Image 1: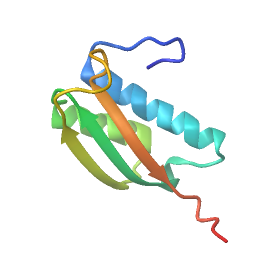
Image 2 (image 1 turned 180 degrees about the vertical axis):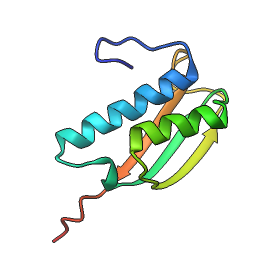
Image 3 (image 1 turned 60 degrees about the horizontal axis):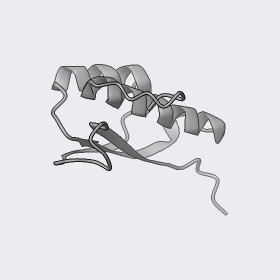
Image 4 (image 1 turned 120 degrees about the vertical axis):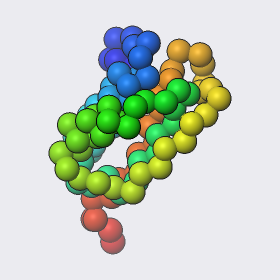
Length: 94
């Protein structure tokens, strides 16, 4: 979902937007894509592998955290076709 609440219709566009939102949250926390340790992608329809790879390469700048892709029957409402669960760690542990 965009900042304005718009959800694109295309699953690949939604995946790209979801990763952009993850990166915005990381930035606000003073973290970078390199701090991502795990990503889980939930898709209601397939995104071609080459398109997924292109999105990941663009957004993660070569970083490759542990990743899982799960095809699901649906998400919280009909409009979302992609959801990303992201775990990150800054390494700043007591």
